[in-house]
Length: 501
Ligand code: PHE
Image (tube, rainbow, N blue to C red):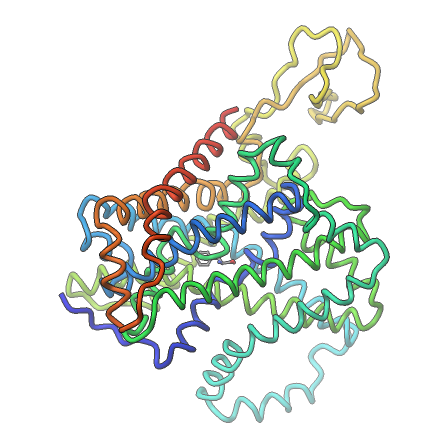
């Protein structure tokens, strides 16, 4: 079966699309908060090691599989070997899970961008007539104007995001106290690895897959559009470097901001970006509104280009299936249907107050609350154990944590949180299934198959078609055969033990 795909007109176009997929909320929102919770420098180090030894190899592997077969994941894996078709199906399920929170975060970014925009003018300047006149002319130029604008934004969005990040990096660097953030991020400190190596490893690995758009269908699909003339390795290296750079830049904004404005508290989780940047823009005064708008508008563009590529993987699975069965592709229809279904699955993410829980005022409970596994009696204790948080319950059923220095009361019933891994919010739950388990599992099996079954020669052959020498054969062979499978086995082990205690 020859593939009938057109490829990108230029390698630049391909790179822009692929980097557009990779650079997104994973970099700007995910990287800083995971670094903040998982030891700063130790996390950065593990992340970089993984990006070089696992991410790059998996990137080359996925682009190769895509380009070699010219197909999207399910069909691509099926063509290579029937045994691995399930990897393709998993690659369709993963973007589904990711979008169950990605859409919600995208919505939050939009709300922030608009919030700052209106603040520039004050609320009352909304809907003024002359703004409509101005845009009226623009719209009269027809649909092609919209298309060109979209292309223009897509191409310029990334460099603009880069410049914006640089400006904010410099601003934050000038704030008193910011130094602590750099020390946290770049100061040689491996204590967190000694304390809980598996936790840092699993967090960094999940983040790496998520941020590089790996371990699912996206890069296979992109590879299927990559022209046979272009070098796979070169593109993989550029994507990994650009994506990592943007993540580190976001870290260099958020971490120092935490030290300058939040007393060095970097571990507030998924809310960290919104919480810390709010204080940065507030400190800027009026200009902060403009900067806030530009910042969130650019993050919005990065998020849209990523969520579109996630949605595309699911949609193209259905479209390819239709075409195979001789039916009309129905791309638009399925894109809308899929988006609506995911919207329904987004509702828990929207309603649990990012894990605030019904206990503390959210509309919907966390997974643990809903399953009723959150609270268990502490049992026959005669004193507080160290490192355990105890709770008491009042007549309204509200649990509150006992202060660390409170005296032990033998007549009180104490409770502990027994939900272990279930004790996460819905965002983390979807995230744990997708980037925590399925992405590493997908990468493990793919790397194993390339290393031991299909052999590295499959990659070399495909990559050298373009006349580019494949320089990394030895390096990638070790990555596929040993480093990725073993590394990911550790990650999965850490994930499972972390969950079930
Ligand atoms: N890499 C994107 C980000 O960092 C998210 C994404 C994951 C996009 C997987 C496509 C596929 O935000």
